[in-house]
Length: 331
Image: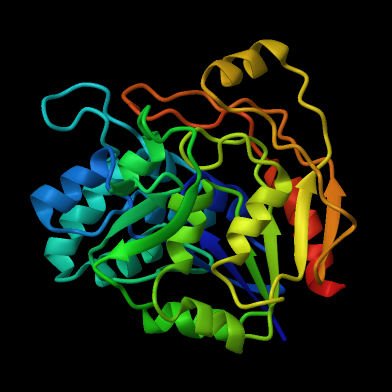
């Protein structure tokens, strides 16, 4: 019988995990994606077309696509010029058009998955239009995923103490069913609040995790991030993460132990308020086992023309991470 594996998050982190697991004949893979993104081209889709954001959906589709040629490259293509479309990806525009043709965004996702031969399911955590509201330790609040993500000088080094959606949203029934039936549930890597916790604050997610018998895994980030995890150690990530899941629910933490060698790049990160996450974890965190492995990718992520957002250059290696996840699934 195939194992049900669910990857929860959005963006590059989910892409990395899914890419490594794709093609496994012993798994049924589902990706649950946050729908709170409101920056870049997603703002246009929300404001001009009344659609939910598609960037996270698109990345998961590309990660699990059996189509590896021109069509896949086309979906990732980002326009770098042109009034109104500079910075947008073809894939996002395609799915926006297909939503009109197919009659719904849900149908658009299904049809796009079929077109690219996706090996798995792509499930929005919710189909309700929401914004994220972050409350910081000094009492200030910031509304909007993009503004939390890029942050501002007033709160950039402050810690987030509470995150919620505005208005309150409920988990989609397909996402809930996937969580409940999962054998393995993977959170991270990715921006702690705008990618990971953003899924957990959707009403019904916590109860689904409590009902599920699947192993719950947290993949530790490689780098801290200004505005979301400034100066965090590994333990800080877990303390914040566990605020939003059932008590003693975490089963496994995966941590990279490989040293980053590129001092020039590390200095660039430091100037931006980002440093490698310090591993201060004991062998056992609560009831969770901590597994350490060499997980760094040797390939450097290059910034695409037209991409206005700053993205992480240090990345997990998809295959290395997949090996650890597979071992944990069958342990």
